Image (cartoon, rainbow, N blue to C red; front, side, top):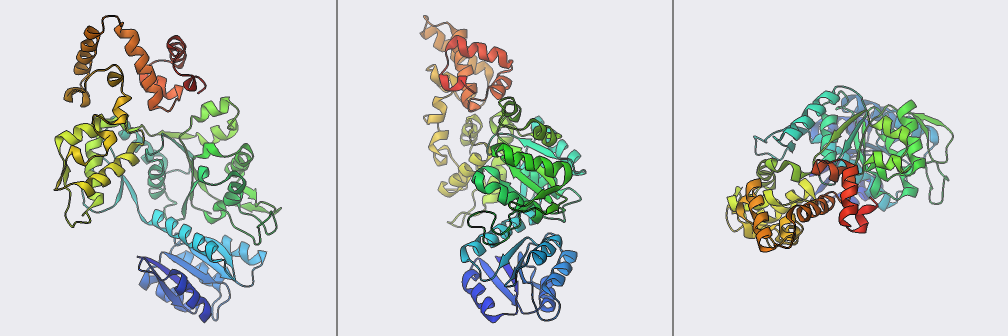
Length: 485
């Protein structure tokens, strides 16, 4: 259950907050003074504090100062009916998570509280990186024994001790935010705020305000001053997901913050100084975006101090049994009150043979579904999503299926010799076809499908240069939508 500690001496505010937030999932605990709120802090361990500026006894700002000395990661939302620029700036300097003016807009209030609760959960749940979870709790973990994941773990450990900017690359669903949180939890800033922002989820005209805040009257609808994520995250860590989606104008302000630690709010002239470690992530090839003048070259080099690349799940199929075990433990008991403990060898073979375009996120969803549908303690092939089964649409895209070759158990489990035998079976049945050109075309087509048309990653997957890949695309006249990427 989420706990909100409301420190306000107005009875109607206490009543209103209970009406809005008191639910089976959320508890509102009230205090009418700063002194009472500080006493409750160690007793109830709230997830978020909502604190009025004007209080009897010690002021709201002094209460905030003492809260930050006790727990710098606890999100504190300041509130007042007497808002001034001076009090807002002072509150943010002291580490307030956000600042709200009374009377409240309920939708805005709910949004700020929800954001603060998510931030609190992200900071509270430590991300471990280990080959296999040994306990049966629901701790968050990055799982993998493959060589590529061991390199990822080593790099996390190396960069955690510094304030170096990190760029995390990889397809959607590979766990980029988990890596960012693992870095945060193992740094000297782990007792300071951690905030995550998905740049692709916010309209471009609002992204700059979300990052840097705005002054009252800066644009239509800006009825009050707003503090941005950089100020909220002062002395902490800011994770910018899908940074490749932001405009070049916003990129310029990001570059300035990274270089000097300064910026101005939208519509403002006062320079704000912050100390924030930035971790960025993208599923785009930023070097290609730079070449197309879609991403600033100077920002790319500023972000790309240390790069951590997360491989797609299909390139580390040996980790799938570990991930399946982890997700089954994480899912826990089903709604029927029984526990699914394992998967059958046949189901595991299908899981390891699937291409997983949605990566680890797709695998987790598949395991959750299977755990709900399983009729006993073991997941069978019938419990898996249809696209994972041999007749599913995903397998239709695999090279051998496109050639009309059957699916043998050995090939599903990754036996190259069995795959070659299947190909020659097809060749004997189709003497008019030349095996190597046909297979080469299907391999290139499949590599482009697997990488969503990204030629750099497709060439790496095939073990050839990008120039060679381009020649083969032209030679085999592979579909036009891949040519432009």
